[in-house]
Length: 150
Image 1: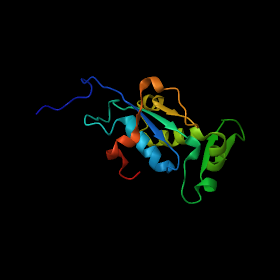
Image 2: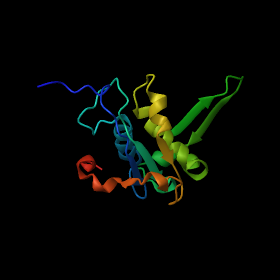
Image 3: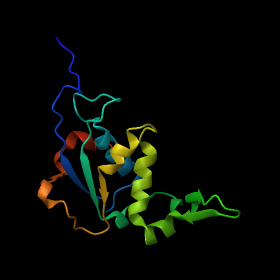
Image 4: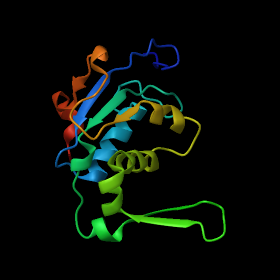
């Protein structure tokens, strides 16, 4: 039997829609990262980009457990004296809910040259509307195999 090489295949990228209402942030980000990488495909290879597009709706309605709303902090520095910026998860969800999901997914992806490619295929929206209807996205709940711990 011959090994399938993903480089030689005609890779077809699918579009999936996920409604984030009531979903746990960490589990949602893990699922999205796996789809972006293509780990659900039989010809997955870690060094080849075979992943799909993901559209996340209702990003402002995610849930977190414990005291993460007040304890989890997002930090960045402006490289100027006194330029450390710190925001809590609660502040981020109120002002930039798309950024919360984007950062969670980005930090779960491998830190290599493919990370930017993966992140370009992630589309996050706060409302229930998106502008990718022409791609005929599939509802992710149809793929029950991916929903083991979700």
